[in-house]
Length: 170
Image 1 (cartoon, helix red, strand yellow):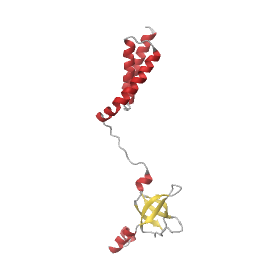
Image 2 (tube, rainbow, N blue to C red):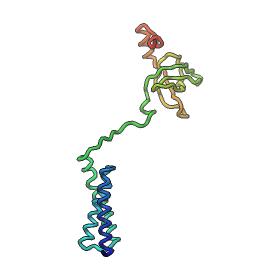
Image 3 (cartoon, rainbow, N blue to C red):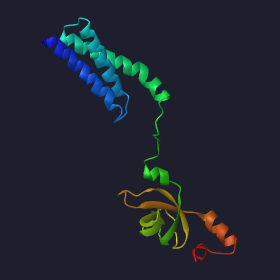
Image 4 (tube, rainbow, N blue to C red):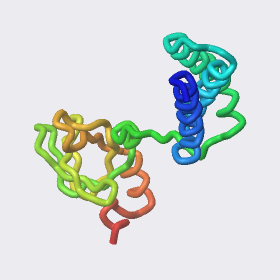
């Protein structure tokens, strides 16, 4: 077996392995690289002798297949991937929380209950007493606590209903 035949078989083997890898880790890109390797193996089988030209054909074919067919294939083979918001602070913005320890306007730390645990909290300016409800504004500078603001309408709504925020919890 001469060197040219061995190189052709290597291109054929690499193409088969890359296409087979799509069954293990589907991404479509490996499949296109493998298909391009099979095109190079075919070109070498019909007479292409140059190894540098083989790499040029492989790169060009890979790029063309990826650019032309990836979008089409992704529509034909939909994935189960979902896109969720990964920014915790952005997702929490505006959430209503319980104030466990009062927050004063002189930036005295208080505590809130959010997502099943307690967090340090600072107020935007007004005093928020313990037992009140507050709204998350943003994370504090260190990223370890939250900046909160009072919610007058929730407190007013519960007072009009005949109870206080602390009575609702009991």
